[in-house]
Length: 130
Image (cartoon, rainbow, N blue to C red; front, side, top):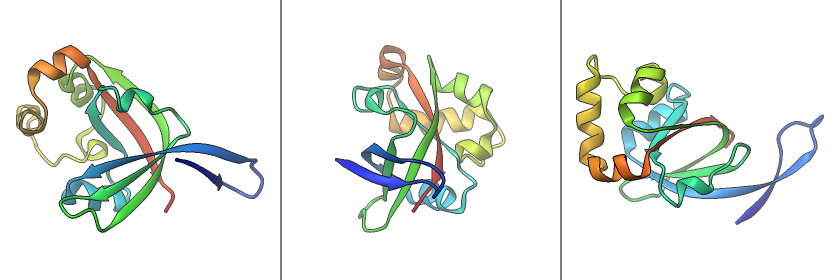
């Protein structure tokens, strides 16, 4: 879908691509509060289409009835989730674990290590717009 959004009165109007993604409730609420500023995903075919300046509408899982729209500010492709957890602090990634191994274990419940090695991962820095 293509949307028109005025980011600021002094800025031009941009045409942006809007991607739809689901987000678990805890991560959704942290992003809504502005404490989670980097979403992490596999760098699969869908995520490779995301570009800086695009919009992402996150729907809160499991029912998807609440949504949150963000603008993509930066992209951080990496080979592994471990690299993302090393490069960024846990709060901006939305994790409350003291140990990296615990965060990696949680990611292992969502994405297989095989897919992680094959596709790589992507950190998506976002800013809430709506």
